[in-house]
Image (cartoon, rainbow, N blue to C red; front, side, top):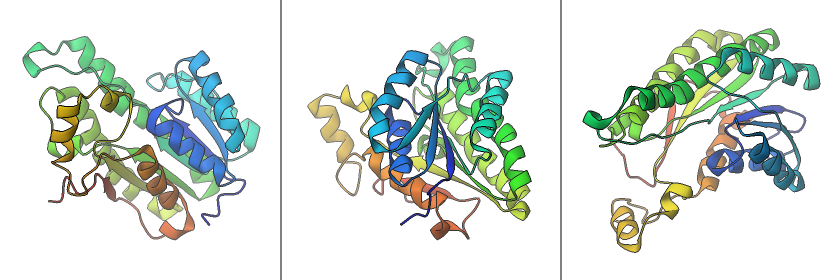
Length: 247
């Protein structure tokens, strides 16, 4: 359906959560999927679990480190000869109120979430430019659009990804590279698992569709954006939030 057979896809932060489900979805469509994260053990286990869905290859990488990212892209090109889709999904949180937020937590979030997306885009795009084709999908958040108390660093990083998306879309479009962003709302992850019944009820009451989203909702959007069906779409932000943010 999505014509992804034999395409090479890199999903950063692909060992769990949304990234894991995106990797699974691409593998099910016949793509060669590379997943990366900092933890080798977690990454290897994720790749083993995903292997029943298709071809999945684990390569450890610290996306905040330029050499680590450069080596990752080099290994992918040596192994597969191309890189067709990059999903910049790696991200962390270090939540706190602004006045209590320390510098190390600010740096950690910005370095992983925003600098990581910058480095992966920089090195992956070199191969895509040689190919004169490619697709980059940046995972942002509705928090990058609306802001959120206690998440100044996270919101800033996700807002930065939106600017990164639109600027690189303009730079790369003439060479056949499309760049888009997905801004998920509240999605069923480890973080939402910690909500009690009252918090979950209050949360779903703010969502017009009346439910918290699933990782599959985000993965389906990523598949569409990577496919020929989205061949005339670039520089756009797709909110996958159940209608929570409409303005």
